[in-house]
Image (tube, rainbow, N blue to C red):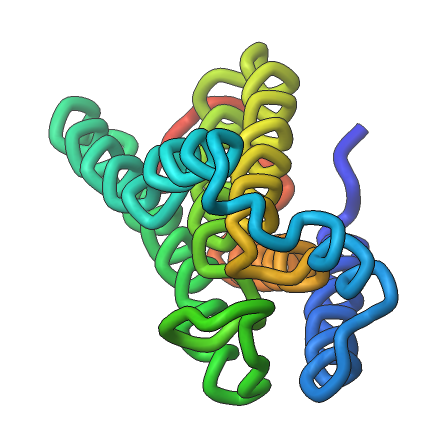
Length: 207
């Protein structure tokens, strides 16, 4: 049974509101959890674990939306009947990814250690979560049997990306949580607006 459109909208609004509330709450003072984790991992970024986290951060980061965008373009060229679907998905991907770019100057949160750019929400986690969200939508429309696997893989990738950024000491834990809230909230709202939710039965939106 599909979830009614209104429920997706309510969930999207609630998550977007939670993102804003969390951002306002941590803009000046980190959460207790933030401080505890940052203190426990102080200096770890200079150790072998930090090196591994840096490699993971390079893989699970801003490059992924670009890769997915290229894949959507290739799919649209190969399957012309799904061009409308691919365009809509690309718009959702862009809007989700922009949540970090737009929000950081609004909250002006400092990083746990000296590092360029602002902190809330994590751009890397936003990129991975955006990619995962759109991949799940794509599968829901064209390859429904893959949805659970892609959803699980996306969740694991988001957690790993968040862990890498926290281990490197360039983000607070709440930065990574905020990224997931923002992407999911904006993703649901934009997907509803673009008629991507509830998902179809594998036929093109232009059919």
